[in-house]
Amino acid sequence: MMDAVAQQQNTSSRGARRAPARVILAGYGTVGRSVAAVLQGLPREVQLVAILDRRAAMKRAGWIDDRVVWTDSLEEALAGGADVFVELIGGLDPAERWIREALTRGVSVVTANKQVIAHAGPALLALAGSHGCQLRFEGSVAGGVPVIRAIESGLAGDRLVQVAGILNGTCNYILTRMEREGAEFGAALKEAQALGFAEADPTQDIEGGDARAKLAILALVALGVQAPAAAIRTSSIASVTPLDFQYARRLGCTIRQVAIAVRRQDGEGGTPEVGLQAAVGPALVPLDSPLARVNGSENLVTVKGRFGGETSFGGRGAGGDPTAVAVVSDVLGIARGARPPMVPRPDVIDQVSSDFTAPFYVRFTVADRPGIIAALATVLAKHSINIDAILQEPGFPADARPFVISLEATPASTIQAALQALSAFDFHVAPPVALPVLGSAAAEATA
Image (cartoon, rainbow, N blue to C red; front, side, top):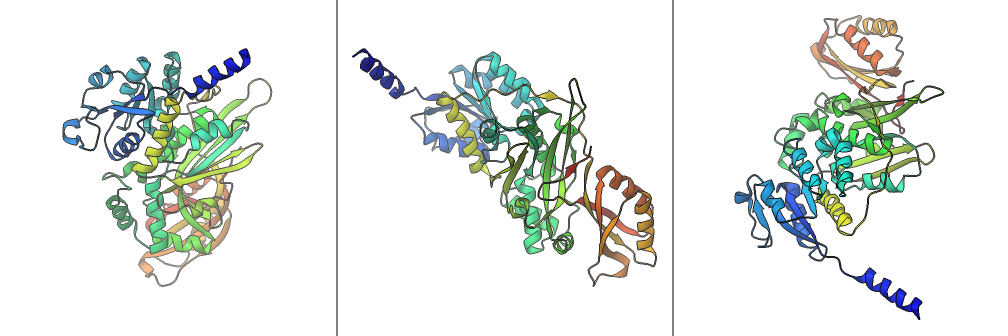
């Protein structure tokens, strides 16, 4: 009889309805509007109590519940009490300051802010732990693809050594338009801006800064290495032309902006030294690789473990709705009482190497004359770089004739040194464009 009563009490406890989690939404832009719309449809588990935006008076929307407070003051937003603070304003300041204030008050935070997490993620996680609340940031990487949660939980039993993928939907949209339609870079960029995939100032996307911040987060979560995002080398996709896609196809490849990080652990005996190799930039990838099949604004993240091999996660990576799914999923996790998994303290490093070894594709544009190939080959030989093939499409004028030399696997530092020497020749019409050729397992890290 006592067992039956105890069972009934336990059942009643499990069936008791939790009070809705009170949510403050900071930032009412593209993602913020999508998050608000999703939250409005979840009245039993969450309650949107305040929207914090510097232009709150102008952005007030009639479809939002009348009880929601609209304000441009952090203090006023927090004054009514909250369980979750959702930060979607972007940038470092005041976003990081607001996150710290919420955590200090014991309010859990959900953010999609890759810059803040890449810059101060471990410190903010420690602050959350010291005040008995949570910091979640699934939306900061790969939009609606739940890669962080999958790495922390589903792959916790493996020792991950590499993470790579396509982390910027804007660049992937531009490159796939160039690949499929032969569009010039500038035209593809304008189209991406018109569709809302690219900002008015697309520098962070095009130059690799956006993907670099996301890669720093993935290195922290997947590889257990905390490195400054600014230490990761980036290369712009602006140098890529439709002609490069023609040559790439002749090599059985296409071109994508690829982010890659590899954990290095060297030394014998005692405590081995931990290092990180990482880079972001355009690269040739084989047509049969998962990276080549990522189209439009999609993202793909592939992690490699010592025991489980490669695992990939893909889906929509740009736009308000996919990111809103990740953000609200984090909010619901907190509202339902779920706790994030405990993870070991990361290894902290200051320097990041970008000296990957890979085959390289190098496009030259020259004012044609006899002896150019011989001159280039002489310099390459001095740097111990072997030529694999020479490709040249016909029909170009002699005063601006492009051709490609594909090179056997070589350290990136050696390629850069050779290119510096090659730039001294006076027959160049445009600077050479060098892109690594990545296999299905990305690049091989140098020892």
